[in-house]
Length: 343
Image (cartoon, rainbow, N blue to C red; front, side, top):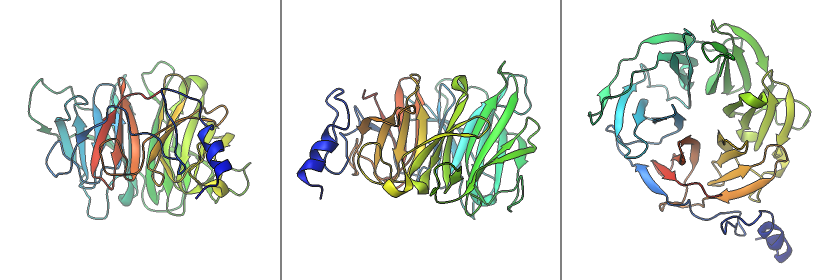
């Protein structure tokens, strides 16, 4: 239990914003106007242990531990399209991105980190669903399968994060980033032909803050206008800010300072970049979302608290934005919640 002085310091660590505050355990208020969008179940429009979210700008995509990839209406929660990964007995995907296709021509593709099969699967992006049509089972064309098991360049142990950099005209793939864990704990980059280019960082516990070391780089988010990327270095309890070449700019948080206070992290898993340049960070162990200023590392808001009620969080894996709404997937609660902006 924190002492009185620590409680005062914790209470003033965040600026007042719509009455947001944290308690002595670093917990924020319940998510604003939250409701369960996807509940527990195995049919389309339901989920079991969802661990992956992505946005295509109009729809929400979710992957759960049944290896189903679902395209979801973000207002109603209805599944409009879905498919299942070709193999799933060994494990399920833990990462996904919607981005420019390696085939170019301005077309998009679905990139899935097929974690326990040591590869990234690239699928053709489907056409828009018909209005008021029941969920359609897809058989998307496989564009490419990247990687195999191993430690060599271009191989993976457990790929878990994917980010797609388009060319400046938005018509072609410039670079693909893939984060992995399981001993490799690095980020690899691939060119438009999906050939290995370079490795960023390596496995480490982050004792030297000048080095790029990772322990489960679970999420990668690109900030293309500012030529930087953010990495959720989950087991090191920090977020990395790097340029797009992989050179370190700064770390937010420290492995030795994992905790509950604002600005500290405990197993950050998911990231979303906001239009104002701030960053939403989902913490698996703290069961909350923090809004972070990446320039200073300051925590600007803390949202969510531990629990199974609506507006509370139970082992959140990831966060996504579609329009003005935010979505968070919770493994323990077997659901996806939607909530409003709280700042």
